[in-house]
Image (cartoon, rainbow, N blue to C red; front, side):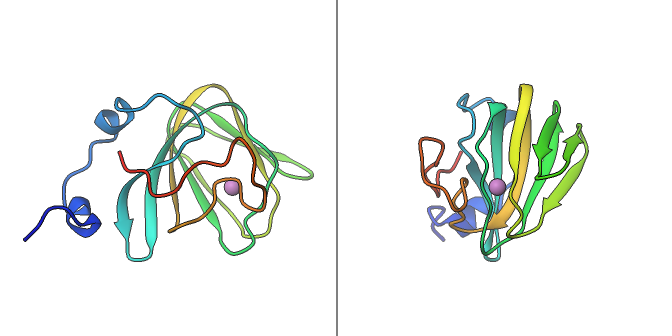
Length: 129
Ligand code: NI
């Protein structure tokens, strides 16, 4: 059996601390596993992201370290370590973090991180760590 396919890569214990030690850039999600047609990604957040929405999918934010804030049209939700939020599809949001935070994202494959927007914050998909 080859260990080169993504499926085989997923079938291994994953240590978040070790994965987060392997990259430093912000707002650039890295895939650590596939779950059927979904991806589990890790991302470091700091400062402001951009306003966007995802036409086709909900998006789960799970905070593993630090604190993040997700702004919506009429309110902001703050998430601390051990907290999560599912942003429903179609809902405009703008995440930000005052200090660097470590976050897990769960969403379908090939979701653009900036949703309906393409700009400098748009990160390449299918980057594994
Ligand atoms: Ni989003």
